[in-house]
Length: 415
Ligand SMILES: [Zn+2]
Image (cartoon, rainbow, N blue to C red):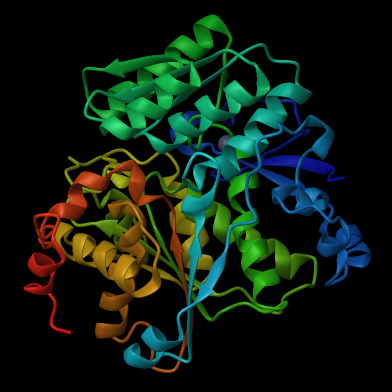
């Protein structure tokens, strides 16, 4: 099993013993001082072979236990990870790409990539003997925590903006956690959860503040590597809200290099909605040598899972993407909607709008030649369309209303 050696502050670089802190660097605070879990990569590099993960015979993210902070004896039974990667040959040819793959993380147990982070955060809560967990989120992370709390038989407290979609509220209520729909922005929702978690001693799984999240999210990178036969694509494109998932992906690719299973990391591109682009703007400032923080802006997009005005993992996200020679791109809500419909129609994957932002971003990146022709690209689809199906109806033809007779049906068929 994995043995973390240290926690490192992503801002000041200070090192702390593993498990000595739950959340952020005490000197830098929660806005800057995200902690990163480190391992003995040299020892792992000597031990791990291209077949090591398969030999565990685990089909969840616990097959990467060697690179996780705890062993699977702490895991909750709900399965996370092991999601499919689809090769989209026709679409690749049309776009002039040598390879195009979509990774469907909407097929995690509660329907989003957040189940990866929750699986590891909940295992951490159990290892640490915590009695209850909490989470603030735009929806998916809260739903994920709720599902894992149900599976673990642990009390959960979740905080979501009151504008959250009805299917997500249904999931939350079904899983039986205490749900607070906060009459305010996501930022206010996040603050309330942080204050309450400190006061009542809940293990707070909110993005960025909890270093275990990235540990779960990075397993998507490991899976990609395994599913491509021990190789990595040249480019990876993913939606970005808080900046946590993209940080996880980058860490996963980096660790594959550190343990000598991969030669180099792909260039990782983050995609944000034009109306909620605080991380993309922070990245642009970073490229011009300006300060990354503060990164707070108004946020307004139909893609509710990435509708974040004050991203919490912005520092780590910006630095991680820069290290991979990646970049950020923004797309309009109309492009996101079209992308969601195209992924459904052409790949058979029903993605929520936020999850389809990656495909919309790929089209932009190809347009401006940031991703060249003949490249090999993986697109991350981060959540299921069943969570937010209402938006799909915009611009899609309705069903054909027919009486129950074959003759009437024939009038509509050109056969
Ligand atoms: Zn620090």
